[in-house]
Length: 208
Image (tube, rainbow, N blue to C red):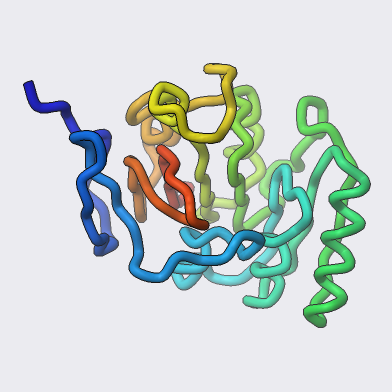
């Protein structure tokens, strides 16, 4: 029996062309040019034009690669992370690129996101479902969320990433988490980026 593809795409306003290659009976979608490790998210880089500049926050920002990229594209951006060492690197990266960012040392489990503060909330590879309602409240009407993280298939296929299923999305779960929002772009499947394969879901959605 042929295995079903992980890739499900709802009706969207924007589409992405991928190069398809077979892998173990499942599709792998890969751009022809693979970005180097340490670069901003390729999903963010490809689709930043869908994100009009304004006030933004990068949740679990780590060393700031996406934060700094957003600052370079005109955002007034905050980076929140639990690691002071990572935030120091984020500030150093911002200085080296000639942009300004604000860093906030905080645990997102307890950090209160201010209602209606942001035009954009970015979340890359940090899944805490309890945070979703806070993210929704934190966006202004017409604000956008960009979200990307691992699927359960990432673990079952043996790709590097989280082992705890609580940190993995089920198929189409990311769409359901933002049900009632305007979905601008969505992808779900196995992708090759940064020289490695991973099963992920990626979304850009607008608060109505």
